[in-house]
Image (tube, rainbow, N blue to C red; front, side, top):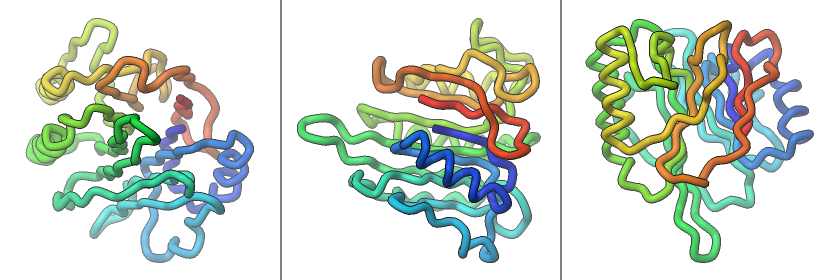
Length: 209
């Protein structure tokens, strides 16, 4: 499950109830707006928390809740400007490990920071099983035709193509636009993608998969 929460702090009880009711293995969140003052409210019973808070200014932030029984390790990245988080979930039996990422790309992000993210993606895209979710704030992209109006969006599409990623969200996730995206590099790795429902007063739809 993935959601853009726009400040999780006041939605914690609702998030916890939803997670346990739906019995999710993984929950990815963008725009947590967490900082040190929210450390007390972030735990969910039965889940490991990975988080990356925005440094030096309000807003942003990404987090992953992963069911405690899964064998998962965080992957270090040194790009403080890029709001992304990567973990590796160990595959059971003879199945491949899954590399999972969550990213928040603010509107009007500099090309320089975009390029740092593309470098991150290039470094991890060799994984045999990769899933990436997040709010990329690129409303001018038409995913049906793989076209875009703006140069930065076209470069994003090039990066997606270069890393052999498929984008699986086909319905609007905020208003009439597709801002929240779900990528994978392998057929059959992600299925049953559904868009709908919101956390609190967030104006983004939840993506379930």
